[in-house]
Image (tube, rainbow, N blue to C red; front, side, top):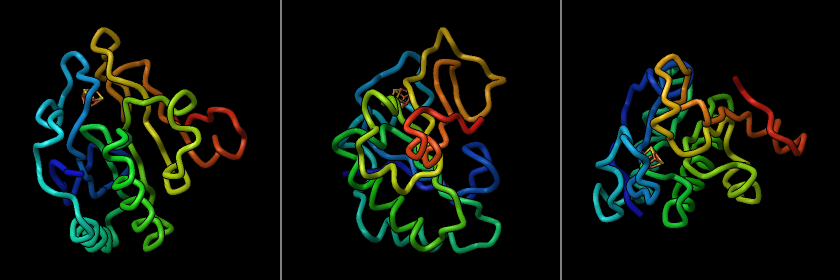
Length: 163
Ligand code: SF4
């Protein structure tokens, strides 16, 4: 499992100032993907416990409101275990900071039984569709994507949108 980059202070992906981790590897290859250098599963750097420790250290600052995990594809079978471990350890250390994940997979169709969901506050789901691109959308690139409140969705057993 590999990752592309860690951003220490990200104000574009989720609410507030956040630590962001961009995972490496994606098979969706959406037209005009914003991050094509993350497609190759062999690119980037090795993801280890040291990577998680670095993120945990960065999360310590009071002004960091949470962790965002993007890609690449964090929920690809090759990446999902690392995504879960990262989300789990961050949530255990910082229960009051949020964990957001962006995935091309769909919550109800592909992810609803995945253990990783236990550790997420928000999942932005669905592939990017260039024809549905709208720059005014918050936290998503195209109108087909959904910003989902994960814990409310699990509790209610139906999709509850965060925004
Ligand atoms: S799912 Fe995300 S990273 Fe993968 S091709 Fe689509 S926009 Fe790019």
